[in-house]
Image 1 (cartoon, rainbow, N blue to C red):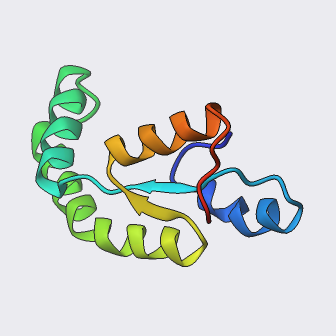
Image 2: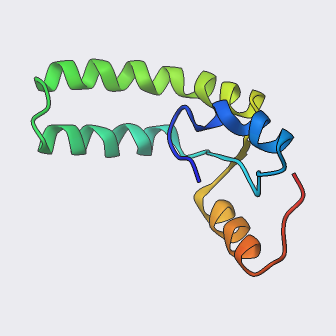
Length: 98
């Protein structure tokens, strides 16, 4: 299992080696992600609020390109519920087709 923004980098090689059960890129509402990230960073006092807002807006705008890149590398764009259902199916022995 790999997780994070760079996990899609290994999808093709895992698929080639027959090691890939599934590859997902979470597709979430961008506004919700922005607010969740901002609340976390403000609570942790990572940087000045003004910097965090600017950084958050930059990431908000970049998110569609990040998702396109991940799907271009072989990950399937899916909402969290869909990912959980897919993983549950894999665990139950009912693999989904990639």
